[in-house]
Amino acid sequence: MEFNIQDKVRLKNPLSYLKTSDNMPMLRPPDLVAIDEVGEIISIRSPDTVEIRFRRGCFLIDINKIEKTMI
Image (cartoon, rainbow, N blue to C red; front, side, top):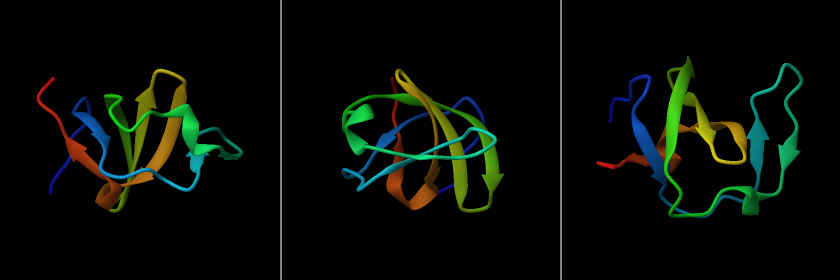
């Protein structure tokens, strides 16, 4: 699936950790993003990784772990 900046997305499954998109990325607990929470893609970091803004922060997530939403 192809993703673009400003697409609304959500997680497919719970993750074991989240990686922040800071200059020095840190691993954070997965409960910062609810499974039904909708985020917005703010940048595409590589063909397999996007930066997503959720309510509690911006995180780097693999594209195979997210899906588009129509909200």
